Length: 198
Image (cartoon, rainbow, N blue to C red; front, side):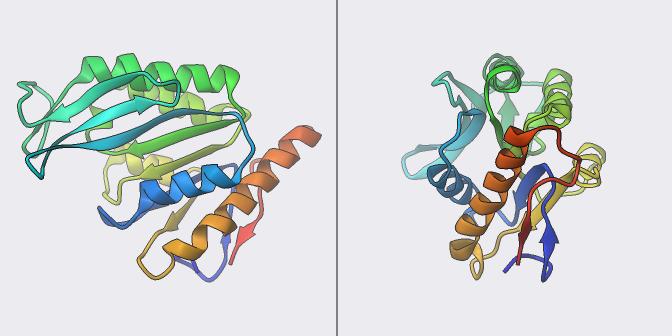
């Protein structure tokens, strides 16, 4: 089940939930179920000596960079992490721009406070949401002007992931994204494309 009993899925679909609940794993499972040309980026923890010390950003084309690290001195900080805006833009923005042009599905994992340190990144997110193809991503479960603006768009649905529903969501979300992609293949689609997850 999802946050509401029935969530109407729009063209752009995000999952949200508390840290560590399995959002990235869910996105990976959805992608495994789809035979689609996907592009974009995802983030990974950087661990040293069993402790999380930062996050990497990885383009689906294989490009990698450091998104944030405890050892980075930066004017952009989120908690104890300094954000490497140069790597965010080199990897994340480039991956989104490439996906907008070449992919059937744009993947964003994740949109959160670290990623929002870059105006270029924010602009690329909006371009991806406005492009003809669908977006599948994760969005941080926090309130700020940009994140709230993304969530409130008419063409965005947000599904809350919990320990109780995460195992059953992969098939339902893959089905919904697949329906949106099939509608795209048939021709122009309105902003409400996709299906329902219940």
